[in-house]
Length: 137
Image (cartoon, rainbow, N blue to C red; front, side):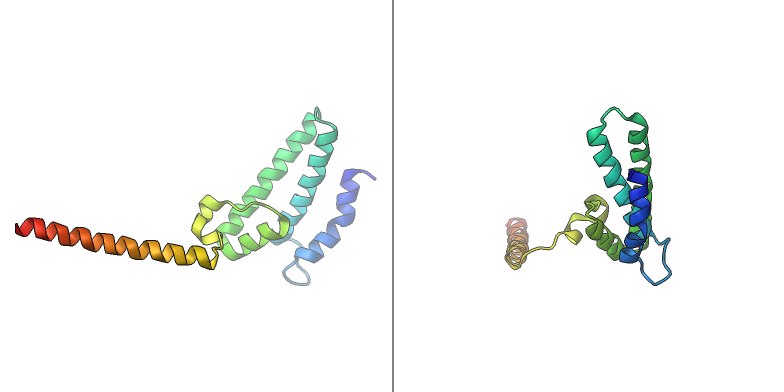
């Protein structure tokens, strides 16, 4: 079975897995999932046929379309964007998200960060006290 026929056969399953409501077939999540599957198939094809320029061009078009949909989704709702990226195995754009918002820290890291903030406050207060003492002298 050819790659395009495989994708057409698996499309209803992809739609069912990613749809938001029962009749949903065109939401960004569904479109991204379909494009992701197509991208995977074309990538596998290009591993076998590295000189197939027309398939490479098609791959780049699909990647661009998926990127536009992901950017749209990011602008609409960050939670849906992150959920869609995780569901499809796509790396989210951490720069756009803000790295601290996406990375889930451990309790130890949170405690260390809090200690660093407290130390910074103490250092700032000490520097202010030193400045006042120099001004008074």
